[in-house]
Image (cartoon, helix red, strand yellow):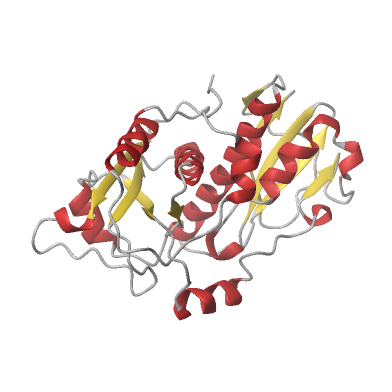
Length: 280
């Protein structure tokens, strides 16, 4: 069973925001050491192995292009993850990497999930990612600049980065026609709210949650016909959301566990796919 991260969860989730513009400053040694310690102790509740990496851009071997297509300014340190190509491994990758990002946030560092806007081949080579594993995302990590770059400001506006979907479009009771209200979720109102605040690729927020009796069933939505790579990113997004939910549950001391028990006799909306369930 996973342990709660050694940080204040709800406070850190509310504090976390995507940072794309950094001070030209290396991580202080004690901060880097703490970050490495956090990386070494990460785990997930799905029984999947997730490999984590951290590299200083200046230490990359000659010939490896560690580019982010102009999206990231000033960062010199990057973290990454890789996993086997299995559905729950994708979810575990999102879960563990978001835990690491929250721990970096608690250290006063800036981060941002990058799934498409980085030179995957260059970073995979520099980080030593096995060729038979998926390498779904990286994140810069460093000290946020006092002012965002123009590129970052435009991106945040385009993606409406600070906005999130409302409860009645994400959470449901017994079926996908009946929205779940906060007062019907009892002790789980806060874990669900922290899930709602989770970041996702292009801020699409593809997760859906169905409450049935004392169980919460988690789903992910994506259009049919998307590429395998896009599908994987959606499942990674689901893992990010489950990080927020589960770590908040642990902080509140609520009892329960994850199990693969897809609910029967539930009419699923189009393009909605089961991930896992939490049984309280």
